Image (cartoon, rainbow, N blue to C red; front, side, top):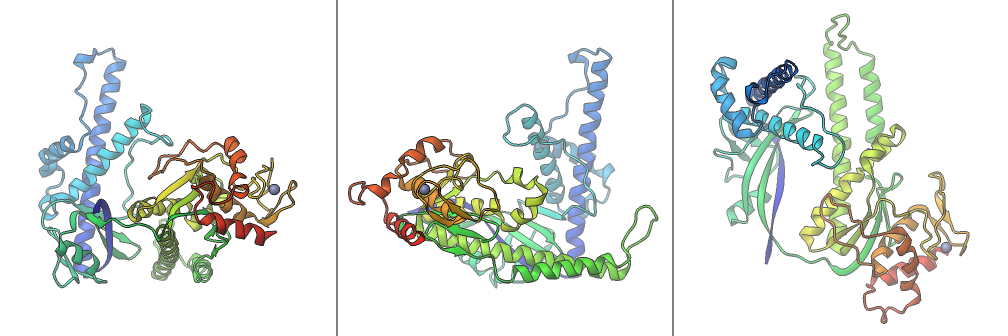
Length: 459
Ligand SMILES: [Zn+2]
């Protein structure tokens, strides 16, 4: 038995300077196509708005422009000889990259306006600054290959590019017929180029080590995560060092002569060098964080049949400036995203507790709920039963007990929030697993014991 999933494989490239120029040219071509089409769309929209204000009837209006990718491509192909006489220098996939981004942006904007899209309002697509956008280009057709030496990739028009690392993992799947490349995206991250293959992969169906095991995960600021088993997962070791380095490099850069729009000052070579150093340090922090997150989520998904997390309103919390740095540092949203796909690959499930479930304010021993709990209170002390334990551990145990209590909330994949866990009802049933014997409530998983152990230990 196997499951078919869409999976990405990302490899660093060792591209030559000539190849890098070629890649930049393709990324620039994508921007040109996007800007041309966006300008066209705006002109037609403004024209129609003006005509309407003059009282032109609907059938007399300038015809609306179709925003679908095929329509935009048709328009581009008719205009490209005039707009970009050099168009033949780049793969058609470059222009397609830009037009696809625009088609999706316009679609999201329209959906958002008509209320067909969840989340915050999506703005109208904007022109992109040459300096600020990450250069990238996506290939969906043509010869996209990993060479048999596993050290090179072949892309349309760009030809053979050396890889910085072995692509053995993907190559073995491709040779064995359990993976198929759907597209390849090349993008620059800092000063290095990467290729990401989006693949359709047949993965062997697996089951977690403890299929009935339940673990609650509280994602925190002080620790990467606190598990209901009492385990504290520390932040990656070198993260603090890297952060200190980051501060030092930023300070060094601020002392050098940077660009100034008002005076027309061009950045000095030393400033440019300092900036490269800073961006490398930023990338290192991001790499360390990603590595730590992948390790913990892989372990959780591989070990436990059910992983329970909180539905944190990450976007909302990031708007709080004071918390933003600490939160984005731990990758709250990223942990959830990784757990969602990893549990589905490992045959487990991810349960997301309702956003309003008071996991921190509830006592994991007696179920009493505190009306208030300041963020500064690191220890949870219950006024009812006198229980005292670490705040994050208390929250993690509460999360695990959501499932242990037998109120089987729905499995959640991806973005859908589970609405079945209601704080009121759950607080009432939560005491049951402790009073009932494990044999009686057949649904209590072995972890019930672990949780109890932790409880007695904490007292
Ligand atoms: Zn209590």
